[in-house]
Image (cartoon, rainbow, N blue to C red):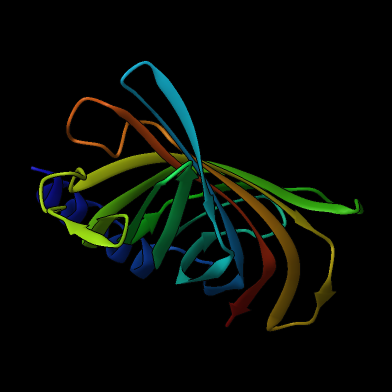
Amino acid sequence: MIRLGLINVFIFFISASTNAQQVGFQFYQGINKPIVSFQGNDESVSYKANFTSDMRIGVRIGDLNKLSFAMLIGGSTVNAIYTNNNIISSFSHSSFLIDIPIRYSFLKSPINSIAIGPSIGQLVASSQNSNGLPVRSETSFKQTNFSALAEVAFTGYTSDNLKLHPFIVYRMMLNSADSDGDKLYINGLSFGLRMDFTK
């Protein structure tokens, strides 16, 4: 069902691209700080996670000076660790991401645009360790996760065919990534440079 929905979204964007007057490509390059929280067995745990790369690419449709939307694809890999007394717990979680931000732009403002939209993450690989010993993780994480994202982009360099904007994105997971009934949320704060290529 999820895969059928993704295929329909992809077909919709391709169809819209062929009919839209203003079509361009977007490329994001930045870094992401994962924010991982876990709640289970009547205790709350905050995992530590290092910065990771944030790279996304996709198609943008609409007017960059008014209203536009995009379909972006990218990847996310989170390596998180928690230490408590003699227990060291860690996991790795890699997902394929599809973002659909809807963007409203401002004219003559330090803030170039704001965007909100849904994000879908499909798990592609995972691992889990306890005190250095591997733990079976095939069924520990949900295969599909849903998030909401919010983006603020700032005024940057602009030419006829290229626009560069510094950005900040916060990604909030809407469902628990844990499949055992515990609450595992993998949120993230990203910042970097967004590149808009136009015809």
